[in-house]
Amino acid sequence: MKQSWIQRWPITLVVLSVLLMSVSGCAGGARPMSWTGLTVVDEMVYAPDLEQFRVLNAADGEPVWVFPKSTEDERRGVFYVTPAVDEKHVIVASQVPASGFFSQAKNVVWALERDTGTLLWRFDEAGGQYVEGGVVGGGLFIIGNSDGNVYALDVETGTPRWVFETGHRVWATPLIVSDTVYVGSMDRHLYSLNLSDGQVQWDFSTLGAFASEPAMWNDTLYIGAFDDKLYAVDALTGAERWHFAGENWFWGDVAVHDGTIYATDVNGNVHAVDAETGEQIWHQALDAPLRAGPVLTEDGSQMFVGSENGTLYAMDTSDGFVMWRAENDKAQILSPPVVSGSNVYVALLYGEARIQALHVDNGREIWVHPPAVEAAANE
Amino acid sequence: MFDPIAYFFANVLLLLYKFLGNQTVWAIAVLTLLINLLVLPLTLRQQKSSRKMQEFQPEIEKLQKKYAKDKERLSQEQMKLYKEAGINPMAGCLPLLIQMPIWFGLIGAIRYCIPSTPFELFRFSQHIYKWLPGVVGLVPLQSTFLGMDLGQPPNPVQWWSYSLPILVLATSWLQQKLLTPPSVGDDQSQAATMNRQMQVMMPLMFMFFTLQYATGLSIYFIISNVIRLVQYFLVQRSRDGAEEKGKAKAKAKT
Image: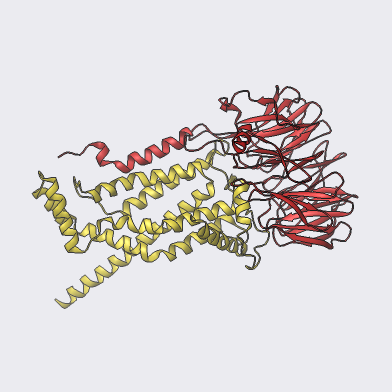
């Protein structure tokens, strides 16, 4: 009995089906290339929310505007990096997935009008994906890219003003202080660049990669590296002042308040270190890996740390005591929370709720996005 | 599922990178070589079985002629012959399946050490063996090779990066062709059909994967295929040498 083609080539059929599904994008939903991060300015939450970028009212989570208007508009890609917000603009990045075997994913910076979400310009010339957001200063938007470059774009037009090439990926948000840009690279250098033309003033190198934004206090930069050390570097000369050894990589941004540095290592340790000497003040081990650094309340009395297991910890900055914790099953918190007024806002990755607003005093939930999750929880 | 193996290989890769002068491609090449040595017994078994199949080709051809009109009987007789000769017709696939966790682990290791997204790097950050000498601060590895980013898939900007998936296809096809037991004539048995499909689909699948994933994986596939081809030819040569010696001895006796 003669076998049919389907009977003779079953493996071929299965493999071809898998290939076709993958190429057509049926094999998975919107996937971010990095964690989603929030920015809160003037009572508005600016949130890259994968298929759409949305602005929510910080008080109640009510939507103000979204970009693009429809989730069907796939040409805009997947929004994830922490947005930069100034008086007129909201600037965020997305990745538009490849549409076939020989096409390439596009990594796009979008500048939107802050009040309405109208598209002002786009920039898609970078060769790699964006991992962390950029900053606005001196009429420029500065952002690092996985192609190893730091791009300075005209904030009004998106035209590149200068490009600075490093030796590896740039996954850190730059810091702008007056006319200088400080940016860390995976090439294990922390660079100080002229804001106007991108020329190097100095560079500081270590054994470990830099993937976080430095913090500045008293002319000193504080930054963690992947060689398990936290560094204090003279902002004017790039000379090391001290370093502090942790248990594992320092990936999150450090926070500084009143002469104390607060930093997390990825093993789940929170460290408070004297900013002048590098001596440890206290140390608290949390029970989950920590990607993002701590964020302080305005008076510096309390701080918040999000963990990989979806728990948000509220801690006393004087001794590291955990005051309360808010748990989120199945979700991860990989970007830093944002404190604004009496609320703390969290971006939840892989959770049913993707944005959460909690009260800083006790962790009481104020609202979540999407609201359907809140309604289901209350039923 | 294969993460523990991937973490182990990733740490070995770090160590090799450290001792090979921070050369990523060299580190991948040496790790691939070490793993090939580890699975050498399985590979040799696969090649031995393949040779045995080749030796029985004339017998199978005879059966095909004899039962040309009765496919069911042909299949039964073939299986009988295989059984009597101690041949496993699936021997071409089985060692491959057993080695799967190792290969997936190695692929995972490359993705952890030359990550394209920070998620992979974050996951790996908690699994670095800090007690290994000199591994602190090594991740991520240097990812540029011949102007290509080993952590990114082939792309039109680095157009020459497409040569790697083509090399993967070519070396995989050659490897499959040499190592898979050949089917004879119009052999319709299930094993022969499977082998024929594997010969076509496996190289295509490997090429597809390397088009989608970081070019570092292509480097690994190419090196791995070349090692296996060299291994095949070395085994072949030593076998031919042994046969010639045997013949010469027999001739000398007569």
